[in-house]
Amino acid sequence: MMNHFYKSNLTKTTLFILLVFSSFVSHSATYYLSPGGSDTSGSGSSSSPWFTLNKAWSVVRAGDIIYMKGGTYR
Image 1 (cartoon, rainbow, N blue to C red):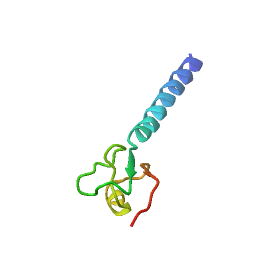
Image 2 (cartoon, rainbow, N blue to C red; image 1 turned 90 degrees about the vertical axis):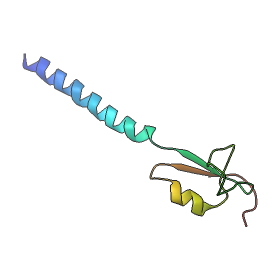
Image 3 (spheres, rainbow, N blue to C red; image 1 turned 90 degrees about the horizontal axis):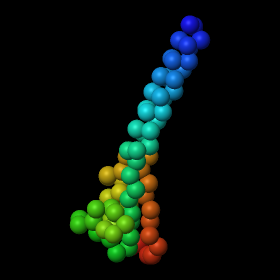
């Protein structure tokens, strides 16, 4: 009886921990910068990147990823 109780609680605890950690992972986003991008009309996507890091820093949250496409940034 006690063994079943511990297994049941262990299973519930494990599922709870997995759900909590998966929610943190699923909320991360990926953004892109490009020398040909635009801070005003860009969305930060790979097809519509931003131009400056300042724009990216104003939007990103902890866990997000910023990719800088190759080129010269001025």
